[in-house]
Image (spheres, helix red, strand yellow):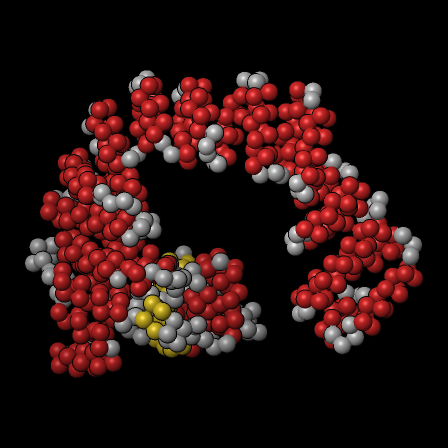
Length: 608
């Protein structure tokens, strides 16, 4: 049932019989079958399905069309211009789909759900149209020219297509001019902005479609030129197209990378075409690094490593080495490391140890450098490199030393470093080393150091566990609590007393915390919860105070929070058999705030 109307029989046999006449009239290969709500929900996801139902019921689908085994339409959305969408279906169900909305790549959005629900519920609203090729073949040359002129008049951007070369049914067609596609891509990007920002792929789909057409004709060289041109222009306009709609640029660049990958995997005999595809993929990898490393080049790197042969890997390694040596700026360390990493992967089968270590040093790949030195048993060199590492890098290196069984040799270096560093991880690592060897006194010193830096319950528990094992816990505890009381560390004192079941002390310290901090609310509630059984009156006072604070803040949501606390107050009065006191309290509160109609309403809803 969709929109109150019974959905038709969803069997493929019934759908084929119903659409057989359409198939014969329009010469369609496969009619579009009906699809169940379950199939739609499985395709787009439950959330998009529910939102798509709302779009369907509101009539958001415009000009629905049935073209062979494809549904096409426009859908009104959040942007001024409707989104264009299509769904292809085969005998086994939905095959593929797409929508021009920001998240419509792959067709898993609410707009596609609305289109499919419209087809399920209102198939007669779909206008039957011929396949595009069939339609175009019926027109004469003069008619086609007139149609093209009309299209260009409506969409001026299409005129730039006339400067590009359409694919031929041959792999040996002349190479197209990359600049013409760059100009077309640049125009598509600049004209895709509206009041909402960059609208996404838009007319770039037309340019990318040229690459797809070349690819379909096995013209891999020209397909690569188109994909590379689009990627170059996207990065050229990176700062204006990324913004809050970053998913758009990922979608476009990934489509370029996938197209280039198809060129690389399909073209086995044309060395020049393969090198061009590799060069374009490496350029995407390089451009992504130049703009800060947004992950746009990750798939390009993977395609190069997977599909380049040994000779091609040596060529790409030369490009990577040149780029790495050119990255000499103050903030280029990330880029150098990325180039060094791909170099190690490209030359993995040919590098000797010295060459491997040299790349690591040149690119700043400290982890790989130390790992290889330790593998080679060159411990002194590894320790020297660790000594020059920053504090954060040293923590990572400590794990590498441990993996090789040399953690104890690194301990003196870490012990010296923690005298000046504020990085807790190094202290924790050294403490764990001592504790693992049963050196509890040394571990306790470091545990106290951590607790002194950032007093907290977890670190207190660590000190307690070590002190108990050493048999000195009571003295240590007294010392810690006295120090925190002297320095007015009432928050951690409250946490400790709660954890240890000292409710009266927790009630005292949380009230002291109120006097020195504006952020006692959460601890107050936790103390009230803990005190409910043994100190219910004290818990009542806390809940009442918190409720009054929420009321004073004003607003319906705050009144709802107040009611949560007031419900606790009521339950506690009943627990204490003081129903009359509760009745008097809530009556006085209602009278005191009688002008707050929203509060009165929320109190009534809560049964108060």
